[in-house]
Length: 101
Image 1 (cartoon, rainbow, N blue to C red):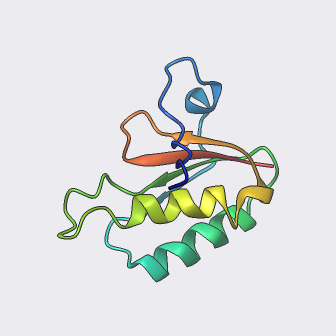
Image 2 (image 1 turned 90 degrees about the vertical axis):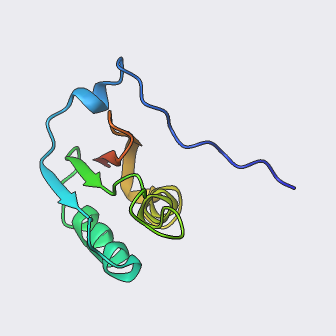
């Protein structure tokens, strides 16, 4: 079985986490389809260098486990990767900080 690449881990020495976000998107209450569309649209409408804060929550309120966090992580690693300069888990672990390329 192939090894999964670990998600970026929070580091207090990460300049991305110290940057002020240009926009924040809170995905609480979004379906997976709505979240996919909203995150994709947000990233695509930003200027290069913009830092975004995408709040997914930790998934503790989902009966079958986290849905949005793995979905957003997958978008950042895959479809949206060419548009991104950097991304990391936020300081709480309930979202991501993203820098647009």
